[in-house]
Length: 207
Length: 71
Image (cartoon, rainbow over all chains, first blue to last red; front, side, top):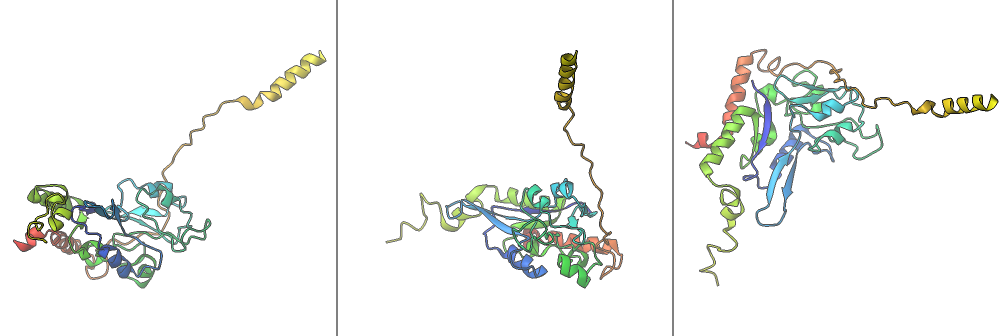
């Protein structure tokens, strides 16, 4: 088994937020905790691009480096997880993370009052017995131990969000890029759906 | 004599804080301090069968490629 990674195809993402909803539902996350978010660049402008972001399970994770209680660990599959029993809610990981992945249930509060950090687990739980009630309550559902992939990726309607073995999902993405041949809106997106703004296809017949 | 002693003492005290020390912190990567985790194929439905777990995951991986699903 190689390293588990997420890969979001921005040519396909339609900003439906299905991944965000799937994640919140799967792990019964409290209000204010979003393990996954959809970020849109040039929102509302033709040609806008969206990408689904969560913990990217970095190979050299900065959160692991800055944690004062060393509560982070990496599984054999390359998934970055943490032990909530050791977390003191200091927020260093939030400042270190380039993706804004660490979430705090009590929101922006004073030191220690934020609550224990919560983040994407690649649906692989935490340091509790696989599939146990304690694991679900602290870290959410452990789909990986059930032989399934993260709920966000499996729920994605356009299959923009891929999750799994890095070489496998890279091959899937490469195959797509070769088949569509083009990049940008001409491949999959605004132009495909609505036509080019300077030469709309339906303009001739319109009154 | 007194003046010289005074000047020497003043210089000694006044310049005592002017030493230069390296201010680069030495970084030591910490080790995980929490409890150990079980591996995904241990316990539950796979009961330690790593091959079966890998096969299930590989199948799900490939199910994400709709070109293979439709053709």
